[in-house]
Length: 578
Image 1: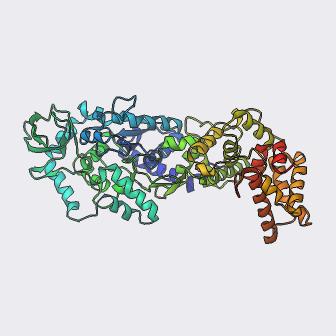
Image 2: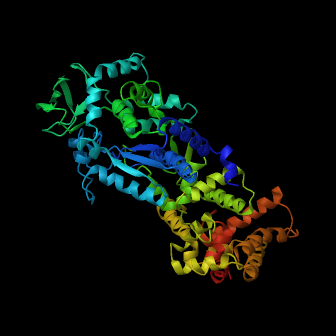
Image 3: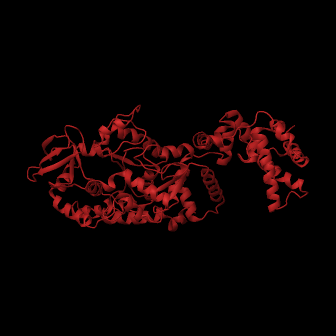
């Protein structure tokens, strides 16, 4: 079934296109897919799409037996632009330095700012099964790997300036606005997220090298203060003598043919790398795809200056969040892949990126919506097992659960996430109590070891601890509510008696579900198989509220059958009045 999905699967369609393009451009050589990440702050779930899109395409190419490499460029030689929320404001003194020259946040075990923020992403990519080759741009620039390309760009600076000038005169909108225009179908909240991400990336509106002293596509880092607050004032093509002055007052003349402390401006750097690495496929966010932006301008520069070709580059929409603040990597507290993997299994997170085309926005749930998402995932698994899943859904599931080389770990017995969350809420993570409840869920398949429901159980417990508001937590009464019990009428007392009497015979999740819905039917003189009517639903709801009030002092709570299993029959009878 997965093979039949190729015709309807966006990943397969891109793989077809990329393979054909690679064979045309560089026959006999590996297919090259690429991503770029700036460790300027927390690398968030929107940035993850920059990696997952080429990862999925590269993995499909690898499945077909082609040699392929997925490059992830760590843009750690970018300038430090702003101090994220939650970091000591004194870090502002480092603005303008390369990210690898900025001290790591206080308490970090890493040697610098870039390594600190790279580390969590590296761990997350490993957990997600992403196979890639990492490239440090600090290492590439400071080792002189790009020296010939830099000298070429400086020799051709007039032509580069002319290319950029084609777009400068168009009066294009800047950064976030351009991104919103390119993805006008986003709702207001997601448009705001797109604007924040465009601002956070910094590259969308970076200095393109124009200055009063002339156009120079190279930006030195100052030998005195270490910052890029420099202006090139003279350059000799014959000798490569370059003179710059810095805002700190320092001036220096260097031989660019031997100098490795600076970088090309972004709009020249990106197309230079396309040619240098022979990239066939690299997506970009909406902030790089509007008229006059980096991707569009780079498409002209890569061919006219560096003799390369622009990669196939689909625009990807931004990723929204439910239950947490919108994403911007320049701000603190943004949700990262590590945050998501703490509350959901890796295949589920992969699935969210695999099932949507790159230009479709979607939301990652940190609130109760995660329970519905897991229900949808479990329903898909059931269809996969039965062989009834549509081809496109089967393909997305296959890409979520395995790669060409590894199958991702999964929970052996995938109990519903909402059930596990309810149990974790009620038991506060107590293993013995948790196992007792789980062993009673299904008498036909009792859980005998918590390892059977891990790692999903651990993810649900983390969700309860970190995402469930305190006012939504469940506290079972320690003593009966004597005042409420004394106020009950005869009908209410009888309904509680019927519930208590039926506990032992129905002590399973399905049995208790039938019992709690059946008591109001019996009270109304209706047979157990009566279909719901508006009147019956009202009676059932009133009955449920009464039980919730007597057990936890609220009108609502975890699913009632799960709550009953958690509380235990003896304690239920005591709280319901004996």
